[in-house]
Image: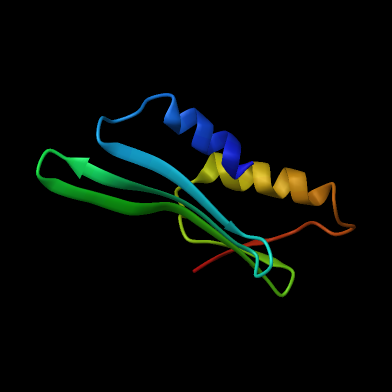
Amino acid sequence: MLTEYYEWASNTPREGVEECLAFDEVRDHYFWFHLGWDGKRRVQGVMVYLRIRGGKIWVTDPNAIAMQRRILYTASHLVDETPKLFYL
């Protein structure tokens, strides 16, 4: 799912700035970030950071509403109870 949003964002690239994904599936950390240069200015930042801990999904960007709904929908089909999102 994070890959789908990443691919969508990559369809409107900014010259000199790269969209990146990093997954640590052993520790359940998932990052979508960008880095590069806008002229002489360094550009870098985390777009979304998801973390699964104690059976809970933690999200660092509460503004990513569409992604959160998709996470809940997907997760609800994988477990017996309705999952909840928590914000770091």
